[in-house]
Length: 302
Image 1 (cartoon, helix red, strand yellow):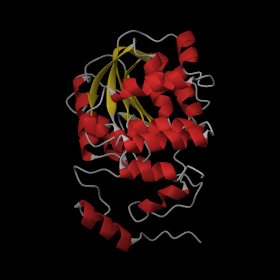
Image 2 (cartoon, helix red, strand yellow; image 1 turned 90 degrees about the vertical axis):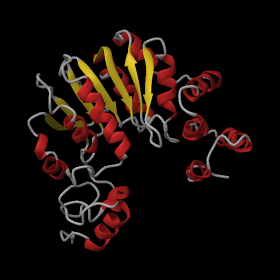
Image 3 (cartoon, helix red, strand yellow; image 1 turned 180 degrees about the horizontal axis):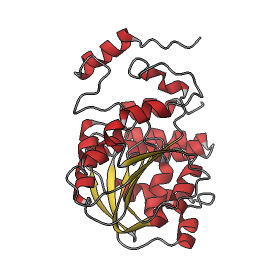
Image 4 (cartoon, rainbow, N blue to C red; image 1 turned 60 degrees about the vertical axis):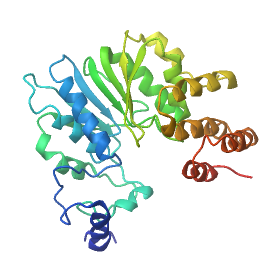
């Protein structure tokens, strides 16, 4: 039977190590999610800077809403109402059990936590619309986008869909924020951004997080997005160029996850021998941290 009584011990322990209040009411500077305070502050700053520009804000992969809440906080002083459309499956998965005790109740895999996300977004319900959707088949139709925050490119297929359906609605001058740019698992992000390097200008990275931002210089047409998002034919040379391009954007101490994503490209392609050779070479050059090394090993078979 599902346990609807909060796990007070695990929640209290979490509060102790994070330094947050030991009640279920969120503190003013911490929202449940997988984003850092530095990222949350950056998202607030972005929405504040763009608050009076025409267009909507789209948040892909909002989970419990730490990204959406942060974006909404930046709109407080806006003279023009801005709508935030926040998308997620809102479906509990086993890996989320680590957050037991931090939610209003405990969830079983497959259950919807949309009511929980809505409760947490109550303060900003007038500007944030939570949308339960599978982004693999979702057809966007809510107007020009001025800020697109992406934390949903978890697979190559999702990346293709997001590029075709959302990148094409980002208006020139708009901001694309990748929350998984500096993450070992997502090499497709680097390939797509490399292919779109003439359309985007790198603007910012958030230290000790996965977040970077780009400004769109010129509109991406649907036909171009379809070509860019086609990841079935990617040469080793193009992957190398894409990774080097991304490495050149971030600071030296933030490069490990990107180098690790290069290895993961071969893992995802089921070319484990090539992945192993690149991993060994990268470790010798000290390009990959011990933590990213451990993460890669979870996916490699020897």
